[in-house]
Amino acid sequence: METLKGKVWKFGDDVSTDLIIPGKYKFKTIDLGELSRHVMEGADPQFASRVSKGDIIVAGKNFGCGSSREQAPLVIKHAGVSAVVAKSFARIFYRNSFNVGLPLVECPDLYENVETGDVIEVRLLEGRVESMGKAFYFKPIPGFLMTILQDGGLVEHYKKRGSFVWEEPIKSQ
Image (tube, rainbow, N blue to C red; front, side):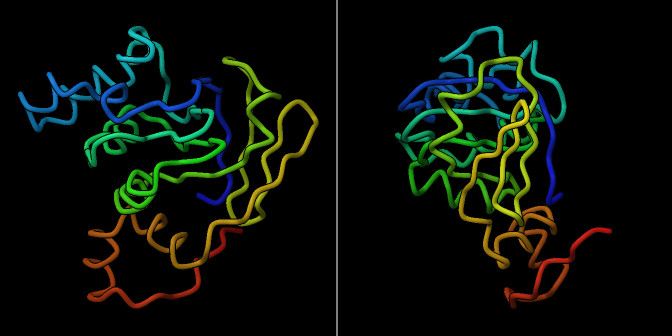
């Protein structure tokens, strides 16, 4: 989990939770399969039908702004997106994402250097994104958040450990 490689889907600034999962769907069902068919519909109506498992969203500033819809990071993850890299995130979206096991990375310098379709590699523990032979750096994901991600989100973390006690993340070989 600490290294993710995937195709880029590029979005701009201020992608709200309503663009990620429009309220007209959110209030009709709780089925993630159904909801994920509409992921990012407000920003790119074709996204849900074209995204592949492991793809990575790269966005501008303030990704996930708007209402506190925990379905927004859930449907992104359920659609197969492995991570979101952005210039910045709305704070509640940031925490909701880690709570559901979706890694987020703030890497402001990457945005102007990638396009949709590029392949990037995100090294969460090293704090580095590689794109077309260039490296871009970010503050590595803190250990307690990596542990939550590795466990599959906050609920799964609690089920696995029986508490919210933090342990160092397990590094793969």
